[in-house]
Image 1 (cartoon, rainbow, N blue to C red):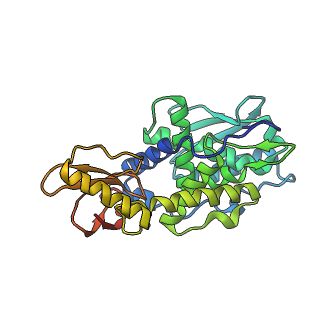
Image 2: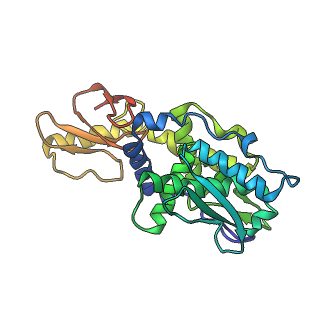
Image 3: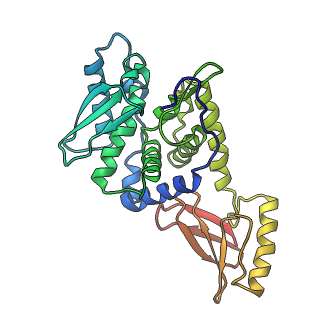
Length: 297
């Protein structure tokens, strides 16, 4: 949680880890498991006014997160104390989990749902036995999971920045949260923009959406632009002469020798790599997320 007046990191410095988290989530849950999260947490279900009892209200919102993430027999005990971070959860065998939130939320109740989304997702990933090595990458996995499964839009909406104060929850940058939410929107057809109360959150979502749409326009996808197709055609000519020649420039695709020559590239939805033969127009289906992709190889 950024302190008032502190600098907030922007851009996409963790994008590779975010994309790896999306792939890991699909591998662990499967296509059918991910599709069960087609509806996000509703704003009304996590609304928290100053007139609500602090502890009863926090327990109510925690139950919303538990139900949304389909956690069986998981009871959250929420308390507040002074701490550096926004929250902390004790990951034990259950069925009770103890969540501590920063005492600042006593007077900033509108963001309690965001903090609980992150902490309850920790419990969800613990139950799934899904983790990344290292604290930083594991926290990025947690934020990505919360956002992609429909609870993490609250984390982006908690982002507010002005000339006199700033606040951001979670480990992703605002634009990275926007990217994950855009990935979800493109997959489920659910636009979270109408729920944002923070103008800065909306701006970050738009920037993330631009990068997410760019994923769908990378060669050898048929929707790629003129410049991408031209670069791909050049690289394909080189690969036909020397299939082991490295492709440079961070384009994402790579060629593999064989007959026929093959090209591999990341699925724009789940980022799992897809391998198809080089031979003109082809329709490919991702075996992990079942996305059907029109390609021009």
